[in-house]
Length: 157
Image (cartoon, rainbow, N blue to C red; front, side, top):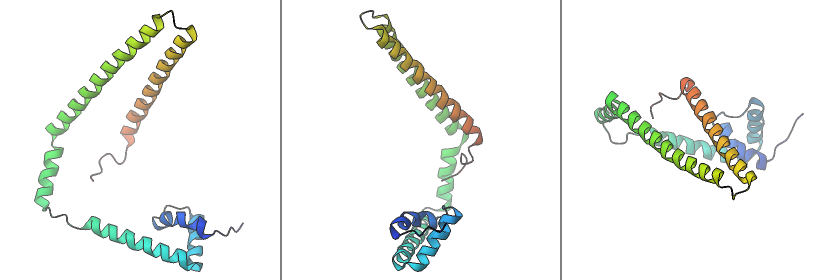
């Protein structure tokens, strides 16, 4: 099943081809097309040049000595700073959850007890609250589960 792809189909795939992100069959189709098409070959060469230039810029020294980089790294990653940051963010999140939970509870309680509102509306609001709570628990569970297996957690940028 040989499928000839036009420049229109190949051009969006060139970046993936350059980064080795395509499947083997897609890479073969792109390579075959680039050998036959001067326009796409020129575009690929331009993209490769741009990629090399960006890599060179990223590797350039930004004017900081290694001692300065190490001192900053030590300051940001020492144990007291990490613990203080963790505690502070935990308090902010807990406080936000308590305050927002209180407002949601009060609003829900007021609407549920308001007998002038139709029963279907009160039931829909209850379903909405339960649904949001379920979504929150699902996302929290996924985040905690992925935290254990996150292979990029200790990557330094």
